[in-house]
Image (cartoon, rainbow, N blue to C red):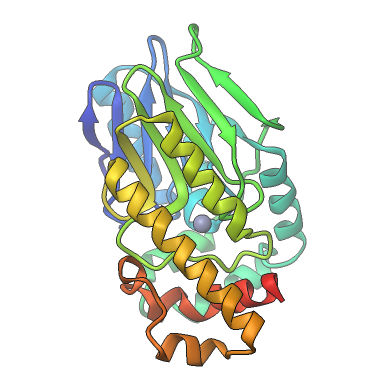
Length: 279
Ligand SMILES: [Zn+2]
């Protein structure tokens, strides 16, 4: 696996072939990795390839949030500092007590071993890594604070963005599923915070946005996505108010156009959570 060079100092993989999008920012003396991918064998190839290409080593790995497709590759980057927000770490601790238990993981991924053999293979030797450095609001990296990591919440309570000031680029994690219906079914997902987070990203005004899923985007796509999420949120709030069922809402075509693709994957689980949220 190789990350593609987006511009001087910024690399990313938005192919979706190793879980969620992930990328890197090159500083003067080190590489900072953003999210780890999901299949640690592939993540190791990514690490080796990038370090060789750039001639520096990855010292810090920032995890935008706690979902498996962004964190299960982390063991490949060791030794490394793992940086994330406090609520992200709290989610990891909770997961380790339940769905991330070894037997639960083996059971869940055994069921998909035919469709996703690489993932099944990786899960057999998976060793989950959790944050080693946490922050409450934001943290800076680099000699001249070239990188800011900021907690915004929304998609999950611990969701953070990674801002690279020099290149005016922002890794937004799963705050954007570019061109897709988002996964919004995490128990800590807060649609209001999510919309506010996207508005905050827009206010920063940087043109290059690396989403958690889907291709790289700019301010226009960001605004379109924010608008679509607002429409979806309002449709859910109205449905709850008037006692409309989720299925009815979906049938009546109240799903905004930019979110219609991928709804078969995440529609139910997301809307179940959002209906409960506004109930
Ligand atoms: Zn996610």
